[in-house]
Amino acid sequence: MDAEHVYECVERCVRAVQSKDARFDGWFFTAVLTTRIYCRPSCPVVPPKVKNMRFYPSAAAAQQAGFRACKRCRPDASPGSPEWNDRADLVARAMRLIGDGVVDRDGVPGLATQLGYSVRQVQRQLQAELGAGPLALARAQRAQTARLLIETSSLQMADVAFAAGFSSVRTFNETVQEVFALSPSELRTRAKRGDAPTAPGTIALRLPFRQPLTPDNLFGHLIATGVPGVEEWHDGAYRRTLRLPHGHGVVALRPMPDHIACQLSLTDQRDLSIAISRCRRMLDLDADPVAVDDLLKTDPVLAPLIEKAPGRRVPHTVDGAEFAVRAVLGQQVSTAAARTHASRLVQAYGEPVDDPLGNLTHLFPTMQALAGLDPETLAFPKSRRTTLTTLIATLAAGEIDLGAGSDWDKAREQLAALPGIGPWTVESIAMRALGDPDAFVASDLGIKYAARDLGLPEAPKALIAHARAWRPWRAYAVQYLWATGDHAINKIPTE
Image (cartoon, rainbow, N blue to C red):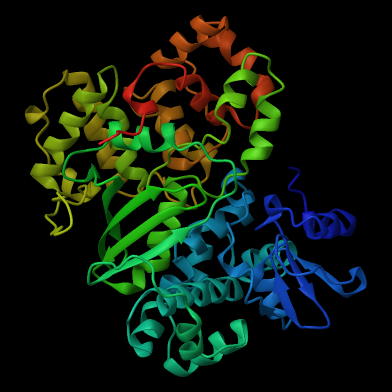
C-alpha cells in the first residue's frame, strides 16, 4: 500500500470507506460534516454522502478540527499507521517517541532534544504531515489511555486521570467529553461487561492488528529465545517483565484470531500507554501485511511460503539496549547457550520482582548495572568479553541510541565501529531492536540453510544482490526464510 499522504487522495479514501476496507484503518480517518464525528474506514454504519466526508491523517487532527470519535467503530482504538515503523525520518521518529510517552514525561522540548532538532522544526513538520502538533498528538494518546482505563479497570476516576497523564481531573473530564461525546462515568457504564475476570491489579485489553497475521514464528521466536526469569511461556501466553519510566510491569500476551489478548500488571498506572506501545512494537502489530506480502510474492521462491502462511511479523523487542546485549551473547552459539549466558547476567545484576501469576523473577539489568560486571566471570572467549563490555559501556554512557526515536543509519555506523560487532550483529540489532523493516541478516546460518534448500544463492554477497527485489521488506523475507527450518523459533508450544 502506497503510504504517501493517503488522506489527500479523496477518490481512494472514498472507495475505502464505501467498501469498509479495514486495511486502511490507521492510515487515515473519515470525518462527517453533518454528524461532527470521525470514523475509521471500516466503520460498520452506512457510509455518509461523499460531499459530507473529510479526511484526516490522524485522530488528533480530526479532534483538533472539532470532530468526536465514533461510538460504533472506535477509531481511536484502530491499529496505528504502519508508516511510523517503516520510516526513519524526523516525523516517523517523533511519532514513535510520542507513542513511548516522551512528550508526557519531558514536554515538546524534551522530544526535540532527543530528535536533535529545534522545537519549531518538530512542530512544523508534524503539523504539515499530520495536521496536528506534538501536544495534540500526545493529548489524543492520553484520551485513548483514559478510555482503556475507564472501560477495563475499576480505578477511581481521579486515579484514571492521573494514570492517563492528565494534569487535573477537570482537564481529564473535559477531554473525554470532547473526544468521545460521553462523560467518563457514561463511558464506564456503556463498557461491555462479562469479560473473563482478571486478577486484582491487572488490566485486560485487546491489541488490534491488521489481518492477516501468522503468529507461529512471532511468538515462537520470543518464547524459544526467552531469558529465564525475564520471559516465559505460561498457561498459553508469552509473559515478560517490563522496565518502564515510572516503575515496572509484567505483561501476558496471547494470540487470538482477531486480536492479541493483553494482560498488564503495573506498579504505576502512568506507564499504561507506554507499556501498550512497547508491546505493540515488540509484536509488530502496526505492520501492513498486505503491502509486505504483495511485494515479496513477486519473487517466485517466496510466493509459496507466503501463500501457505501470510502475514508473518518481525519479532521486535521492548528494550533496544537489552536486545543488543543479548545479540552479542548469541554470537556463534546455540539458542540454549545464549539463554544461559543471559540468565546468568539477569540473576547477578537484574532487579528482583514479584510475580504471583507466574514464574518471572527479574527485570533485565540496566546498562549501568551491567557496567560493573567482571569480564573474568563471563564463560566465553576473551575477544567476545571485550565486545560485550565495550558495548555495555557505550550504551551506559548514552553514546548509542537504540530507542524508539533512534536514527537507524547512525546507530548502524556506531555499532559497526565497536570491536567484535560485524554485519550479523548489526543487522540483527537493526531488525529486532531498531525495527528497520529492511534489515537483512544475510550471513545468518538459518538463512544460509533456507537459501540452500530453496535454490537461492548461499553466499551472503550473492544473496544480498538477489534480495534487492525484496526491499524495503527484507526483514519480513527473513521471517519467511527462517520459517522453512525445523527450529523451535517457528512453533508455539502446545503446552
